[in-house]
Image (cartoon, rainbow, N blue to C red):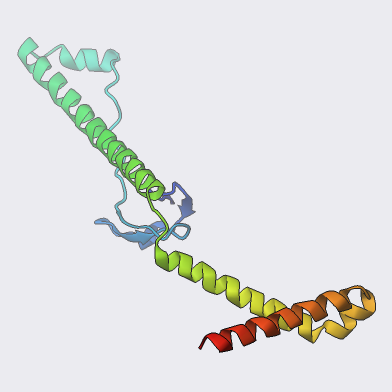
Length: 165
């Protein structure tokens, strides 16, 4: 059975035996959205007028024919209404999520986490350059002066921070 996520529209192949008649909670493997999924019962086929239906209606009065017709139409319309309500709810949910996703501003904790990642990346780059200084200078001789200046600048920054405290 193929199930489609109502949030991101990703389709998944799921064993039909895993879903009971009353449905169950399902989590999307792509967007982690959780919703209740219930197996849809296929709606009855549309009323097809043919000779058999006409012959069966021949013995009924006009009032009885009208009641049968209205009952069949009511079944079809109610099935269509359920389908359309489901589609409308899905579309409203998608619109709501799209507007919520667009309106998310970055807060201070996000900026702080980016700053921490940047500092850790810079420190790891410096440690890597210091570790590989000799092989790099052998390959690129002009790199020796640049690395020397970089390390001297870092020492000056360290002394400046110590002087501030």
